[in-house]
Length: 169
Image (cartoon, rainbow, N blue to C red; front, top):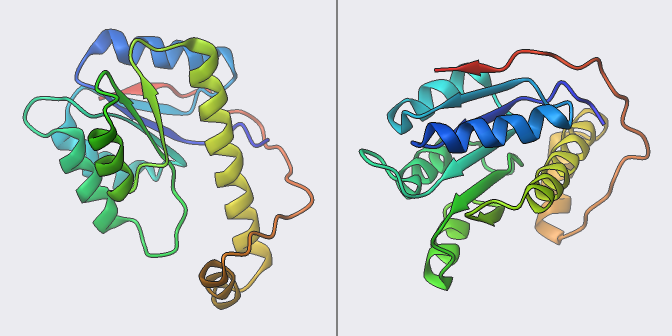
């Protein structure tokens, strides 16, 4: 898999960012931008163009639900850009609300390292397959397949050299 994938992490707690950054780095995922400032999420998203967003839900100033709403308006219709939600609140209402706003998966706090990385890799694999498909199939045909519920997958995804740029804002 292409290890030059960009990951944006938003969590108001620096120790949580440090932990997720360490887990990602151990897996060779180092093209990471993290911030404790949820108000900057849209700015960072637009400039960094991530392949995965990891987002805490309960933050001051701007909670994860408001961030999901902003991202939902920013991500084009039909685009697959996974958002992994981190939360200590695993209630059904919280999960349903986040899913309705565009979250693709959840991790409950406290984080389990193995489960976190399995979910990250699953989302990134799907993102890589989606991006590869976009290069092989015209957009109108992809939209037709999405409306019909079909999910074709390309046979081969080439790996690119890993970037080593963990950045903090």
